[in-house]
Length: 130
Image (cartoon, rainbow, N blue to C red):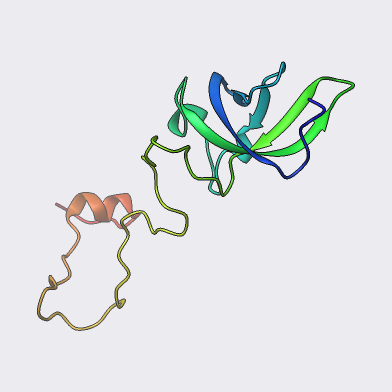
């Protein structure tokens, strides 16, 4: 643990997944913890959606507490370890959402606006006889 310094980026292997984060073996006696808030640059509700057991990951050392034998790690901004493929979105990607011009007249490649059916009107609070 004495060799670890804040800011180092090291490879590791996921050894345990909990509700609050992920434990990673980085080659020292004590596994380090990647808190759920440090798993991704985006919100993560379930660590299992980001990593799997025995997955190779790259982590950055945030803090080393020798007295309490704790290592705080982060996966923010790190790419998966070599040979592990991303599996997720690239940083800055829109997740399949395409930007377009709002509104506009119907024309080539667009559909006319649909009128809501009775169920939608009732759901919106409008009283309409069917």
